[in-house]
Image (cartoon, rainbow, N blue to C red):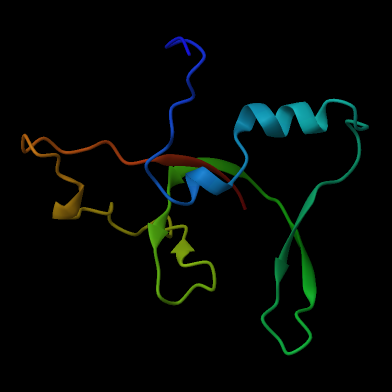
Amino acid sequence: MSKKSQKVQPKHPLARRTLTVRKLMEMLEDLDGDLPVVISADYGDYCHTMQALSIDEVIECEVVESGYSGSGYAVPKDDAPSWDDDEDEEEDGEKEEPQMFVVLR
């Protein structure tokens, strides 16, 4: 397999199991551009009610691990300090760039 055809595997576990912007755009291209868009999320109740939540903005940010989230990950609040963890340092001591995500919220 040539280097051009090899896919780079993202390091962040969540990035390995979610859509990319490119794939999302492909999925949306045949839909009516005037349709309203919502996201769904499990309410967390006994019946696992799926909520329909409005989208107010699209941002780019890192996603952090969270023990409070059912997914194990959370989107930091706007006023939260940047996630700074020594585990992100590479062997040569340089800081590894965080994995960025597009977040609909």
